Image (tube, rainbow, N blue to C red; front, side, top):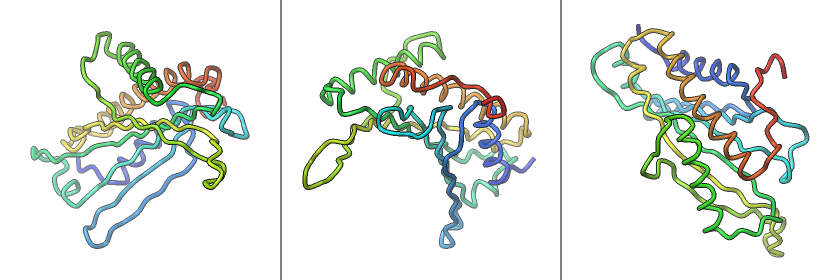
Amino acid sequence: MTLSYEELANALEEGWSVSGLHEHDVAEQVNPTTLERSFRAELFPEHGDPLTEQNTPPWVEVSFVWGPSHQIHTGTLVTIPLELTWEYTITVPPADKRNDSELIRTLQSAIQSALRKVFHEEVGHDVLALEVRRAYKAPEARELRCLEIHVRGNSDISDVLGGHGHDHVQTVIQEEYAMVNVLLQTFADTFSPGSVGGYRSVESA
């Protein structure tokens, strides 16, 4: 089997639908100089409308870069790195008075809690990069609109290039979404309880 960019992108789309996530934006680009294709999708759990700083649930952006080497070596024994990048955004209303250090400690605790749910053991090192950003209503007034916590991690899915078939690709993607769902729910429980209504399928939403 030769895996294509389109098949991987379709597997991701099928995966987020099965997981009950909703696509808010998909961007695909081709770089003619390097012949690389990039894929990015913003994914939200089920939520109420309209979204504001008060009720925006934690959400995730998934992306990957597909180059000529991936297409050439799919179905072979040659190992070519292929990673999915996941960037989570957690919106914290300005009424939350915790400083950056407190927010980071709370987030690290939430991440460890999520990992314990998935792996049933302690993960003894940081697996995700963390950053706190501030959004202001007007830069000159410096009136805080909200805080955003960004959490970034990568998943090595290089083995899907080994020609194991569509079912294997879909299994790998579903395992990734299972971890994503646990993280999103844990972040919601920690920073915005009640903001996520559960991961029902899109059809039943």
